[in-house]
Amino acid sequence: MDTVGLGNALTDVLLRPESDRVLAEIRIRKGAMEMIGEEQMGDIRKSLERLEKKLSPGGSACNTIRAMARLGAKTGFIGKIGSDDAGLYYENEVIKAGVVPHFIKTEGISGSCTVLISPDGERTMATFLGPAATITPDEIREDMLKGYQYIYVEGYLIVNEPLVYATMQKAKQAGLKIALDLSNFNIVNAFKDLLSDIIPRYVDILFSNESEAEAFTGQKAEEAVRTLSTMADIAVVTLGKNGALIAQNGTVVKVDAEGGKPVDTTGAGDHFAAGFLFGQTQKAGLEQCGRIGSLLAGYVIDTVGPEILRVHWEEIKLRVNDLLYNK
Image (cartoon, rainbow, N blue to C red):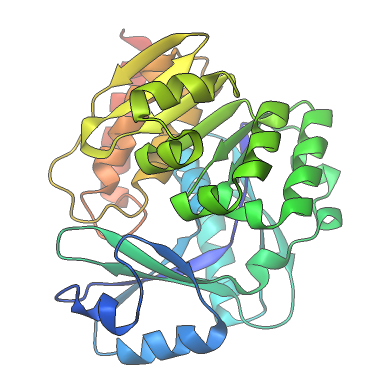
């Protein structure tokens, strides 16, 4: 097995308001990821019920793991869902993607994320975690980790400190390499001390975007990626339309972005991580891994939602094969 993901199991509800005025009405800052309660989630949905919606299994780590599976990787996903229709939908979609499910189930409603896509493609997220945020350390069993090379942990779980510490300790004991995505600059700002302890102790591959890297290090991307690579074996800082920087052992590699003007940036970072990690499982070099990541990110920004359309995957796999074996 290649990679198992650990993250918030959330059904994405994707909406496209005509303007950003909606964001002011629901009091959420553009580009932010706001944590909300069940009541506020209901109010937001009600105020936007006139808009056409699209459902998709989401959560950062699950997006990454499902994309890896589409490439042919043998992946699994650990998450917690409720007993409602949304939980059943989520589980079925994960299985359909070819991912081995390791779900913890509980009574009640499942978590969801309302994704508001602005006319310029920027996304703003209002997230109701529900049971997704209630995973306890003892619910991460050894058999969930057994046989995998990597575990990919989304940074949103940092709020659950006991879970993160216990899971990373279990993963190391099982011989897995640990990849962590910083996920959001608000998470970095709120948990900087915790991240400063966890990353050097456990993390082998660290993913961040430009704003997250700067929030953590106080440095611009070019300096930040070098600093981060002294804490983890490999540091990746994505730069949106300017590509990505990858650092290891004092060497910095830059890869260009792919794709045109984004329709929706939802899932771009998740798919970059998917491509990069897939390259790692194939023993590819840093530049190859980065280019596969950019390839996937370029495809996902061309559609609404956090996943690439099925029609593109055969073409993608041919291009990935070319990147891996025709240097």
